[in-house]
Image (cartoon, rainbow, N blue to C red):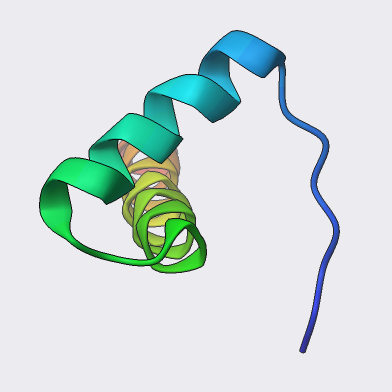
Length: 51
């Protein structure tokens, strides 16, 4: 699946630098960051549900 995401230029520059330093494609870095965020949000939602 292909998605288009609009990023603030400063955020895009940050992730471009992360990708450059990691030696990874920008798409991989963004995908990994979004996957991690989704996991954190799911965990937080589960914790709130248990309260």
